[in-house]
Image (cartoon, rainbow, N blue to C red):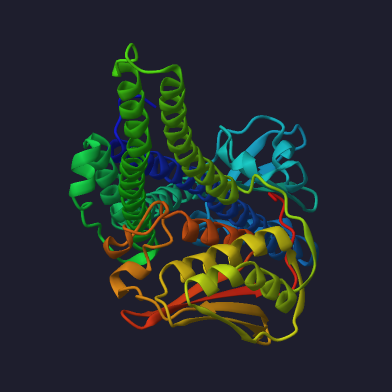
Length: 477
């Protein structure tokens, strides 16, 4: 296929190729069927000839056996119609082997060996030979007679029947081909529309593709459903590209801040007039500048490292280390780590809702999930409120939740907060890069669970993690 052929041309070319293959198969079947029908007609005609000649031969042989040769000759000469209708000739052979025509159809141009056309030497396909004859010997007293059937009229009849059959089958093949072509065109029409849409998308620039809706595709039938599914995939791809674009912008924005601080600090240290300063002040100034640079570099490094960890989780790069886990004990240990932080922030950590639950999972990832959720809840909870930790078993698997009484999340932001570097406008004054919940989501997927968010703006949020009782080991982990 030509490399410059677009998708729509390729789909229509595939339709034509498919139709050509179908047509070739149909023609082969047509030829085979026509040959079989001709064979059947020829075989039946040969069978009828043999049966007719044998029946007539038995009748005449009885006359020769029980009456006389003269009687037979009288019968065939005076009643030739039956013989003529069936293209049968009656000949008499004298003692020297010469044949003398008596009655019936015109005498055929036979060779001397008329016995060569007897039934035991005749095959069905001999009807198409240059001498399509069938002979039967009759024994008289003392003469010898031959019944000779000429197959030429029947061969002509067979040719007419075969031609009619050929024309009928050809018409049927043409009708079937037309119906199949219309059916293919109608069935593949959504595919052609899809290919046309793909060609349009391929010709767009990235900015135009992000700002333009994909062409509407025809629906109906399995291919219509397929086109709709592909359109959904393309729309999902558009969302992914937009998300990547937003992520790159966010990375550039967040990395630019520490880099700018490093540049400004370095330029300030280099431009400072150190000739009038004492060595102690120069050393202190350089230490301060290097400390600021190290802090800014650490912030950028931490953000990039977290992004890489989220990516590694999503592609399954790290091996799972499963073991039996006491979930209530694990949550209690994490809560204990935050007791001093909670006390300083005047926030109460409530662990009364923890139930004893044991299951198989990865402890390190679970701890990281709980730490991120608790840290996130503490960060957005005002003084005088509480953060609740609970866990249990719901019949299908285990669950645990972290509930706060903080600022809450608006419905339009609830599906977006699990994206990398996404932060609600009201939370941008808080420290962090918007990666904690993205890390939680990636790790929950790794643990074959799901995360649920229930939040009311101004009242608080509840993050619930649901996990299977025993993880299924997959081949890519």
